[in-house]
Image (cartoon, one colour):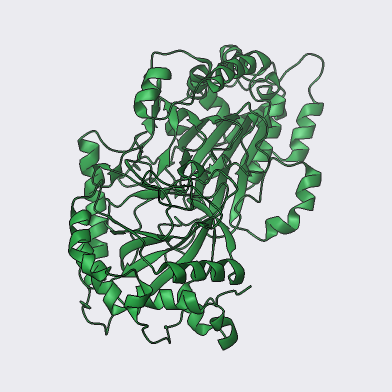
Length: 634
């Protein structure tokens, strides 16, 4: 198998007779295809059937399958197999290069001046670069997908994909009787999104382009408009395609305009900000609104049954310490043990009033609201900046939640906003899909169900006081709690730092970290180690000047991101230690589970996402998630 060099090289091949590579009469069709392009929607694109000489393309496919090495790649936004950049064929030894001669011929023809001029005429996009070639081969297998994005990065000008499904073994034919090599029921379609307002794509796609042998689909990359995704492949088939971009002319090429790329990128950034503000004003902005709600202060009453002076001092340090997120526990392990030993008979340490305790006990496992156990929980959190509590809801509330979710799981999963409103009262769909898509309970809903009850509980002042005592944070100024459902084949959140921020005291952005909690209430078994997605992952962010700082990757990095997890036993964690060390960027992974509460203090540079839930998942991922902005002491 051939592994392409990592170093980008210039093509050293002379241009082949382009007309013999492509279908007869292709270039004469430019006016016809330009007309098709101009009338297409939801944004302008073009589809060309039978692009390449059929014999050559069959040879190319055989070369790819027999000679090239594919690397598995998975981030927040995609999961697929991919080769290196095909420009680097030029750097292979002669013997290996000969094994890919058909592929090199096709690559050189697609970046020839004749074909680039043809594409430019069809798209009316201006000249395209011949020196900056950007082409690779993607193989989508069962579970592979690519989520919503607009392809805007650097000097990209035209995005394209040439389909190479296995036409020799698949006898599926379209309505016209043409052999396509792919059944649309297998997934893998390119889907285009209409925009509600510039920069805000609709939650559902409006154009589906299923793979067809020897078909080229392409479109001009448009900031805030050219949103698309690739549907998950749901069967054990290989959806093979050559894809890439034509770029703006580079310095030294005909058509190069000094500063054009920088100017377009700057205008795109300013336009994106203006578009987002305009969409918000018109009621079409992001939902849930990406600003936390202002909160009332929590009750600071601390109650104890006649403690000693030493015990009272310790209790007050636990409950009222103003230190902002200390790096070391305020209460040491030895102090905790001494405190426990000093408790005799029925005497209990109470950090909550009787009323607060009674309210929390309606929902929470009693062992998590006992004062002494709370000291242990605080000690663990301050040491690790995270805490995981199993069986968080008490038996009665857990049974109520499970009954409601199980009832919903038996129903048909609502797909569109119309279906959600009709069949799931109180729920709606988040937007825009290039950031996230999931169902969530609207905060002002009048519908009553078990998930809504738990959502209101986690948003209560009593629960915020419990959080304050556990975390040693002084209080919370802003917060948000959402009940969510991530549907198979539809839902996810993409990696971002601090989705919901509040304004700081000076009117600027508050740079303090966020306290985040997720109560996973997914009752269906079989989620395993993340094979079906649905896991919540925290990872270290990359610097702005990173070579991998690609919006399509969304700072996700390459390789498997399902390593460091709090969901394994100690024995499993030891066995997996070598694998975990391979990816230090992953800070925490929490799988979809039943009745598990995870609490995390998240710094501003830490990224988080919920992985796309596979269509083959055993059910929906259900959770209640909360974010709280701590009070910044002046």
